[in-house]
Length: 634
Image 1 (cartoon, one colour):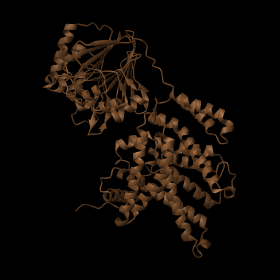
Image 2 (cartoon, helix red, strand yellow):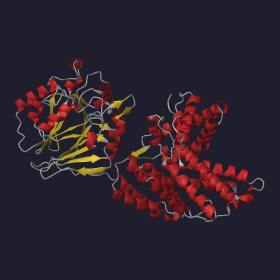
Image 3 (cartoon, one colour):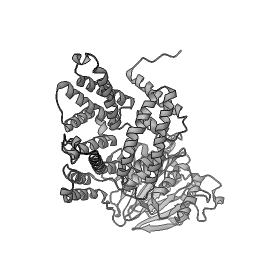
């Protein structure tokens, strides 16, 4: 008989989270498309939300609502305080302890409990600590200023979780609240109506002023968060103000309350409440999907530098400052103009004849971006897991957008294996490709998609070459008669891999796909016949087939004689790539062998002068490391 684990608060919380998740899915029978959204709204678990839905939510700028937002925590804390106040006012209980202290404590305990149920996310933490600061102030007889509450909450979050500053939620949550507190100033009451005079004006006037205040608030948050969203996500939603104006009241005051009340009710009452919440979310999603389909719904940009972020922050401070808008419109527009510097595209510093290659940390697959002074080539598009999770969506597209790249001159697909072509369909939807070169059979879905978009496609074959900005691109495999005819693809796709050499006057950079024994033998034979002089050249070589034991033959390594080699492979992958015998072979030949699980993404940059240092810059997490010595070797 198994031993029962000892009781703990964390275990008790997780048990309740599991029960809530199971109840929502069970009562909605798991066949409702937005059941995962209700789970996220109630307990912060976003794993069940489909990636297609996330694209819509992010494109419309309402992603912050599809989780435990500060507004939800505040709403529940207020409800807990209200219930405590109603109960405590009965009889002589106020003589034992003042009602404000009881309501403050009840509000904080409600916020604390709900933050735990919600997985203690940053927005929930921030709101909970702000409620706690207010509670402490009430108990100590103080009246804190709004920014005092914000600063104390910020301090507590950073003390308890210093790594929170490395998450987008930290900046978006605290940044939005700071912008609101600053822009609205110390005023209380509605804009245009002196404090304490709200009841002296007509209802229509109050409603109109409330709408103006809501619009100003939405504009403030939208403008203030542009730097953060561009820095973290390389995009911002143009339709966000309109989408939020509709989604905030509907999600906050209809969907979320119905879902929260539903999960605590008996099943007979819970099901109709959850169905109502789901129906409201379904109708909202239809409208959001329409907005997201507009061509101008989202603006994309590169990841801004710290200097541009500082300039935009100064502009935002000027643009959203408190006070009348019309009288200070000129300076506010100037502030907005400073924010526009975030969209200044970075210019390449590659000279004619130079190029660089980014070997992405793509997992078990291949994706390499080669850039010259004015051209870009993407070699393979990474793996796909299942039907929807592909590297194009998760890694390549965010990387390209972060670099400000929206157009690729040529896509090269080495062969048809899913770990090389998996992200292509996603990229094709979001990135403009001018042409495609690859080893694919005619019935491949990617070829049909490319032709449908009228992208020129060429079969990859030995002897092809072209020059971009003084940099040569040469195809070494497969054979000269290769075409898209399915008759060429009867054997292993690996042996049909498109092998591409990129070279300038100082460097030769090889991309080999999944070439194996037969392809390598043909490659060695062609190299012997060509007898190209590479005097003074540095050679960087992609280990074929991720370093499998059927590749990287001794004949090929002797023929190419690389100075460095690298492999793109998954961490602890099930194929055991790169194979120990292959690693030992590179080591015996004195060839440094870099693997993306160890280095992260590798940025290789190559000058145009023979003998110039060719320094591999290894990107790891958010840090850039440059490894080199006087010989230029890592």
